[in-house]
Length: 305
Image (cartoon, rainbow, N blue to C red; front, side, top):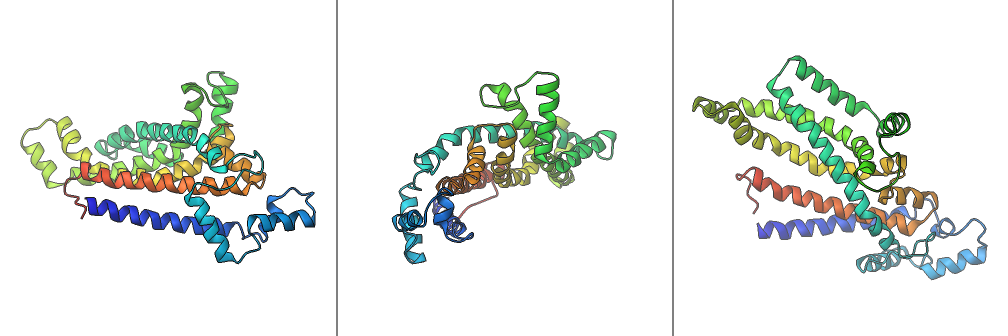
């Protein structure tokens, strides 16, 4: 296990290095970054001085190693709009985005687990058809459309929940449903198919033949093994949820990293965009590592060497 952890940490560092190259390259895709990072009214002399100060007149490999050394020390430069360290700005918004992402994950599991179980146990029934219709509908609905629909119904029409901002749980409900609905649909379909496969296994038939109650067979023997592919998808969906948070936070004016990133892109605030991408990459890598380690709990046959 320890060797596996060391190997995974080294692999993760390589992935972070690759992301840093992509982030650095993105800066140059639209040409000279200096005019992009300065106000429209900047003169040619201002641009030349800024280019020299930022090291943009050096060879590209020197600029990358300079960028990398600053990243290692957590220095992405100051935000061009706020005048504060870019990484600190992003980290200040990280708790809000994590809060929204975990709430969306909770909502998606709250929908997917009972729907997937009922659908598998009542295969080809009206319950199965209803759950699959819900899953298909959830996958087809764009999150921004669902978010606007929920605002119109619950905030504008019924006045039950706030339409924007961050505060208590009531501010979190509509954005979490919006973000979690699409991923709930995927997990519902996956849990149904996985549970159907597990229920046909010999050890499940043996458990039933021993006279165990159906609830015990389901919870102790079937559901735990059927959850393994779902856990895999949860790890992969953390990236989708955090990426989807950009749209959801914009629709609900939720003050997380996604809204900050949209504002940074609109204002050509390159240091904040770079810091945002690197932080998102690190968080997703850590989430996937935790999911891999969780496999050993779900399936003791999984051995990491």
